[in-house]
Amino acid sequence: MLGRVRTIFWWEISEKVDIKNPVLCIGNFDGVHIGHRKVVSTARDLAQKIKKPLCIMSFLPHPRFIFRPENFFILSPISEKIKVFEELGADYFLIVNFLKVKDFEPEEFCELVKEKLSPSGIVVGKDFSFGKDAKGRAEDIEKIFSNEAEVIIVELVREKESDQKEEEHKVSSSLIRKLIIDGKVKEVKKFLGEFYSVKGCVVKGAMRGKSLGFPTANIATTFFLPRDGVYACFVRIDSKTFKGVCNVGNQPTFGSNRRTLEVFIFDFNQNIYLKQIEVFFVERIRDVMKFSSPSELKERISKDVDLALAILKGEVS
View 1 (spheres, rainbow, N blue to C red):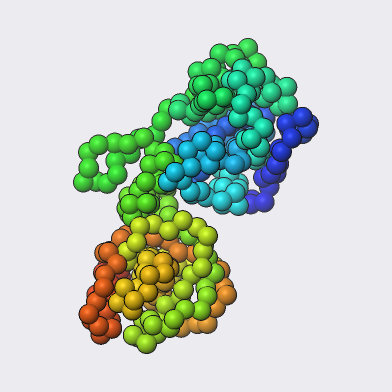
View 2: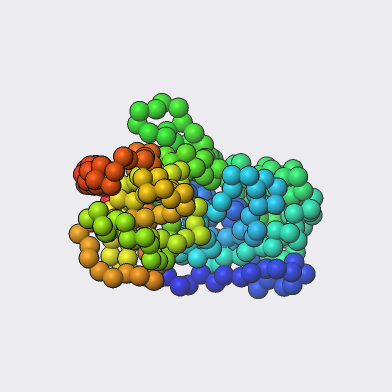
């Protein structure tokens, strides 16, 4: 049942944390990809076995915002993480102020965890690092808590980008970000477990799409947009999902350099101004192109629609 996860924002580490002897699952969990889900599911199984609550510990701001902000963006806001953690059976979501602990030595951080939480179990991924300069490793947690908690280190999940490629990659948030930046959204689903999506509000546009016979919803969003191009997509409005095709980028045919997200929703004719919608990027069809005339653009959009329909036919949103 959704809504049962208790979320605790732990801004001052001197404060008491009212969680008793949990199984602690530690990580940033951005995107909650298939590797993260394996870690959390392992922790849930342990919590159920020893009859203790499952507590997921994460950090805010994300450490990469502080140390390596280049090419960084958040894959999933806290609200989305909570939904997934609920589905995975978590009891608590403990969000730690990273600025308060970033300079802790690994041993110091572990002592804090012992003092405040007295965990019965700890589960981390094999590549987990912590403490000042990220010196602490998963094996250090195993050593430090050897007499006080059952520690499980979960092996990394590896996947091929696509069926056409033999090389396997470690599933990581960094890899998923790179794929999105490159516009390889089809490959993202294999690692993320679902299509990359952005949420935004429908706002007034220049009405050019309507004049061409393809009225588009213009989306104002603070989410990170993938590489410029035309994409087959799903669109969720309220609780209903529709097929569509979207354009990320400018409109060179009309001399506009403003980067926007515009979506043509198939078989849809409703007023959705100021509504929040979610766009799921399924596959990139082509680059943004400049056409010699609006009629040439209209012809190309018609082809894009046909391509998008063929792509989406075998997909489930």
